[in-house]
Length: 217
Length: 291
Image (cartoon, rainbow over all chains, first blue to last red; front, side, top):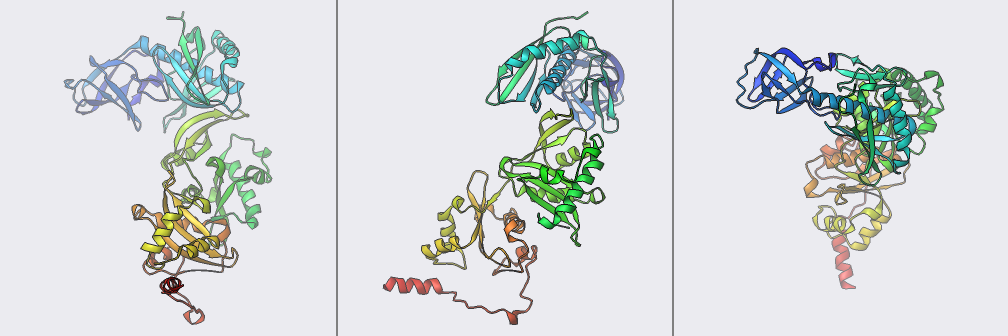
């Protein structure tokens, strides 16, 4: 079990910890700030003791990191982790933007079904099962989301069940959503966004989200 | 514990179980708004399977909307949970699916989600109901065999070739007698999801008191994979074959299979008589050849 410090403090960019286990080029850590892809949010980029993390994957309640084969780390070794923060921050902003799109859509179109989502560094997408085009709903959707972002609401994020590692984020009174991603503190950090509809086949609609502000202030 | 198709006398007990189980399992819903009448409304047009104990007390039920391969309900009474009843109901329901099934489960019900995941179901979608409760859509495993009593689906050539040439009991079966036998029976075909026929059986019955299971076979490629057992389970759960006073069959080598489904040697052979002519098709062939 790896202590997931990215949940306690999603804004932490460096962390001192120890290597828990080593199996060839795969290592596990006592604690980590490097997120492994889950719930559609891509894995972080970063370094462990100066070695670039080539891959990260969840296994049970732990995370396994793949390092270059010549890493030479031993179990118990003290290491410093470094997070590619500009990438992570974009992932967090796009992730929360996608959450707002989803929640707003659920409240606008009853019975809409989300069938996929992916959060990458420069673009997020959500796929829905929907018989009709989503285009006519986009302006109203955008207006409601812009209002939620402009209101700069406080976002809470915590365990719903610590034993099983289940978490949620919430905008009190607006939404309470199970999710194990890393979340912003305030909705305003998302900044301005653009929504675009893509046709991905019969009965399926995709909404793509991009960030219009590089560094929100 | 046994699983059987729904029977009307179970209605009141099931309505009560549906109400009690929802109230105890869904504390985030308004239990006061739930009513006994919900059961009939929420299971209309669905195929119901009921788990009951040795005394006939209902322990749980599953309800399938067959047209969409949708598992609408799966409830086990709180006192009977954790005993494998849900799993048994799910396996019985699987015989009703013709393609990969799906269900919706409240996101706030981690116990149910863990159960379905354990049974090989995977999340494929999510949504929010009118009251704001989040649900997940889960998809179950693709069925390996699909049973049907639709005579039109039969691969008649395959069945006829098997019975008349390969079976040890109907060698030389004339085509016209084969066709007439299908006319007068409940025919059961087992099919690969791609449509290819894997198994066959027919039941000669009045659908009330008596049945006779005949011409059971599994094609070579589907043997040793539980196909015969699945066929028997399907028959056991067929709504029109319930409460038969006597269900008979003849077998030379599959006693072990049928014994698992309650069949045994004649209890009082002195009371059963038969008139049998094993070589009838050879006699007919000779007579018809002369004509």
